[in-house]
Image 1 (cartoon, rainbow, N blue to C red):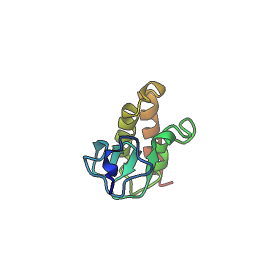
Image 2 (tube, rainbow, N blue to C red; image 1 turned 180 degrees about the vertical axis):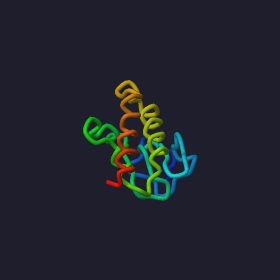
Image 3 (cartoon, helix red, strand yellow; image 1 turned 135 degrees about the horizontal axis):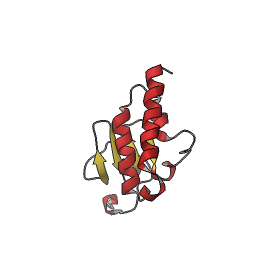
Image 4 (cartoon, helix red, strand yellow; image 1 turned 90 degrees about the vertical axis):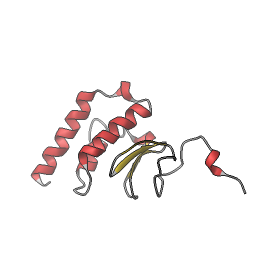
Length: 113
């Protein structure tokens, strides 16, 4: 039998269970930043690295996750920023844009939309 744990490349999909030794850069209560991207602990929503900037100017992942009342928005915003730094995207997005996205998501959540 071969041991797949020696594979140093990025994972092909999100982890079913996220353990600290499995390529985790940061772990909160609900979200983790991994080799794969951003993963919801316990399963569910995940964002692969190659999709972090998807629709960033129109409807970012922060705002998408903000639409989910069961999601910890502040923790996801933290995970998003950590993922950008860990995966080398920091130069592509300003902190002001991230804060603006968090503000928009909070406003929408407050309106109950």
